[in-house]
Image 1 (cartoon, rainbow, N blue to C red):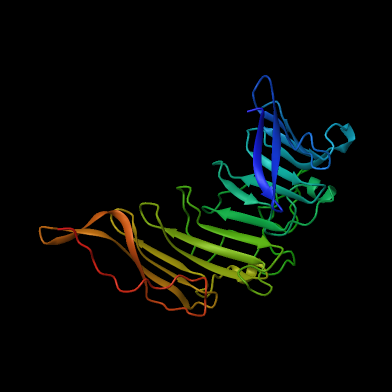
Image 2: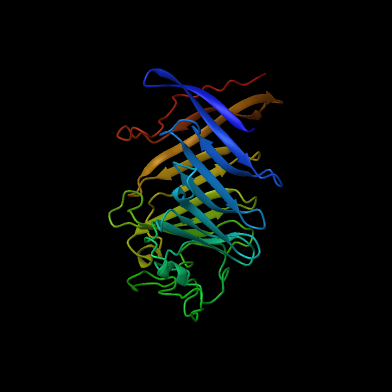
Length: 321
């Protein structure tokens, strides 16, 4: 496709909007998109630059694409030598998002929930403070590289000093982002626990910019439960105390969900749902006819929460003879 035209109505008036595409002659990859190319004042262009391995490396935008000095960077991407994304830089030093992987190739972290930088280039690049960071834990020792800000006591490396590794920025409490009460070692690739830090309070908690969650699975690798804790530091969430925002799920032999329960931030029951499916009577036994969900009952009434789904009423089985 070289160009596209879309007709729409703006302020009650019909309008025709165009998009022109530019491609690489060798690889057919998209290298440019220009919106409203021939409409001065409405033109907006994107340029896409790639590295030698055909990976997206830079995105530029311009209101006047014919001028070489009018292009501004909106994103830049760097990759590890073996392929995965290493970081992406957004805008003019707005944010730098770092990615770390373990030896299995599984994503270990996005930025550093401990509050430190992952590379010296972050500290020297005048990037704004991270607004989001997350660490994913699979099993004890799933990431052991020293000098990256993720292993306590590791020696700093040239490209990645470890300020306050795996601890709170204030240096108080536990320094371990992978040791949460109730978490278990999982070697299947399932996530055992996560910890996130944001620039805002999470889950409506005051001073709750840190959130930890632990996850449990059954023998078929189906998710069965999770627990959540929030606080203002890593130490606040390590014990996973309380029953806030917990989830429990059960399944039938076909892996259909049969029950699901959830709690609120103060640990009170929010939902206690039972799922009903089409059934059939065979040799005086009631069996599921198929995996089609027919009805959901909720034993918990929450009239004060307008967004919560309430009970669908009495369930009358419609068994096929």
